Length: 392
Image (cartoon, rainbow, N blue to C red):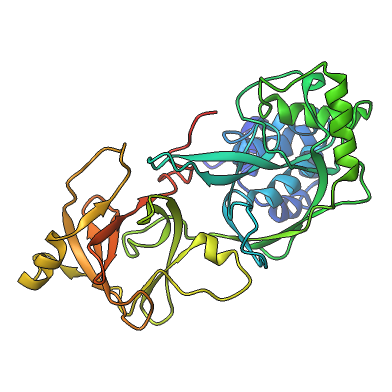
């Protein structure tokens, strides 16, 4: 016998409603006074909705110090959710700018953290995350975004707020220019966080409970005064634009797609972005080059994405067997089994070459002008997290 929704226990009703969108919940509230009252109950309905969607990723009860309405929290988290993942810097006019071009956003306990991804260049594939942007919400429901110019804080190390050097924290606006483009610019209307502003201090305290370096100096008043003078005298931070890297991992249909890392002939590690173009080819560019405002040549381009399956011709086997693989000196050495090959187009510098697909899902590329193969490894794990991160 079928039961009416009104005859089902309230906890089950809330569970069912948590799968609806906000628009559907509002429509459902119009069906009766009882359901309208239920849908207006912030803790009963919107807390359940937030917990079901983000409860395993962040501590929803800690956002805004637990003092904001869950309906407001839903709107905030839904907006910030689009940030999660990889973004690349774009529009940089000066190639000498040392800002790392790749950024990774992830959930914190009560904030979203953006970290710049830096190659360590210690002859391994390891990278370091340097936090530079923290996005949260105040107890009054205001968006609170802070830029960490020093990037000295590390995740997972609790520390008392009074011990932090916070003169390097700069209030910023994060402007969403569509789903795949953001602009981060300094907010001159807001003063940097300082001791005595209770609501802002609560927010930043919670953020930096997990972000601060245990070695952050405290008690050195002379040093603090010096840092404050440096902050007052510093040049305004220039706005930065970022583009979302939506296809950062390979798929079965597009095994070369995504963010990759590998060593060039100079033994320095580079980050690469590989995309499938509209004419059926595959194009690879350095992430560093993509951050520039001017056009740059690709690392390689293939006119076709359909692999030639192994075994190869005798000529191709000779080209392959005579090559030296460029891999980390201190990494594990694996004998790569090659499953397919692509021809590079010779119209681009540095000329004709090959792309070899390995059975383990990675690939390498090389040019006929030399005897090397650059073996690449994924930047992201299968779950979307950053791979090979050096612990703080």
